[in-house]
Length: 457
Image (cartoon, rainbow, N blue to C red; front, side):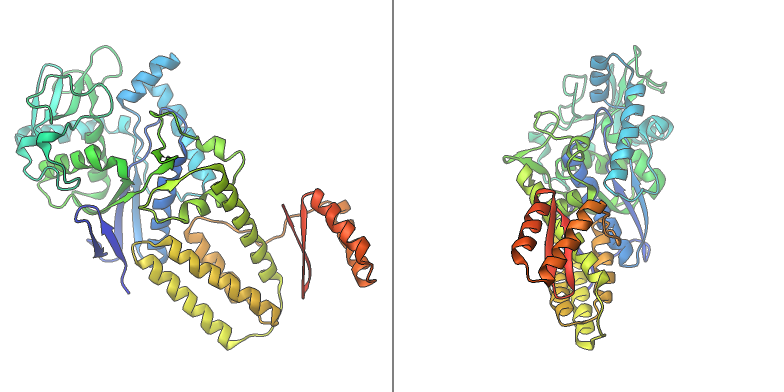
């Protein structure tokens, strides 16, 4: 079965065929760095990290680029509030962004281009658009002439006569030919500006991604990803700019869009004030818990957030960690039937992921692996191959399971040994009392045919 993906551009499930053999070029919209990332950002980064990891697992070689937007109207507003500069604000939260990626166990991109370092490329692309009649200058900036790009709306399926296409802040009040036109360059000689043929100013939001993605991945590349709320206007405008400037079609072969985190049915966002920051969440939950939580729903589906769902994810991850340790420590004999079942599970996992990265179905196969291994351990079967596969498959979701048991202090260890002695002497009242005592200390005991196991609650 070949990998199939749902392409936002066509609204169809298509067989994935990169432009250049097994080489995949992939661009994902990164953060606007004016505050800590929230859980919605974490989900987007994690989803595309899983897609990237699965492509690499499948034998593809990736060139993966994620931008950093450090020039934006939102940043100017926030810098004014914080009584700082846009650059200082961007530097601070760029560092925090990289810390968040590291804590979430997200693999580094091939390149993280920042807007402030690519003004030259942005100006060059605007000049191309102007030469071809796609851009025009006005008293307050340079705008894209939407009416000239006849395929405008092909990604979002919007009708341009009914829509506005500007950026997030300070938008449609400017001097434009039509309300649908959007800013490529904003004139500003007071602060936060660069020199350009049209006067001092700064780039518009959309042109930034067009210039940086084509610089590092070429005029046409394989995958462009981002959250669903970027389809319009951001990604629609990227297509218009890029295809207008390069006259290469398509700008992107496969558009993949991730679902949003919701809180009580509403999109989690800074503008609505209903967001939970990544640093705040990670005070109580580790990367395994978050990555598990994100991968339990399909990457294109909405995912509702509340503390119960995260706590349930934590409990599930703890149980998976405990399984891995028990399985790794188990001893037994090789069993050909068991090995055959393991191979089937792996293939079923691949089939699920090849079906538009169906992570819930893929997780069902991992749980089959766990169930089969637990039963086989009771039958004295060697399950080391299952441990290896478990680690291989969960790594695709960016999860790390320790191969070593957690250390506990000598007092706890002494109580566990005392309980074992009581059980051997059939003093079950003492054994049960010690079990309860350990439970109050945060240690859960599990009796198995191979001996007692413990885990932290």
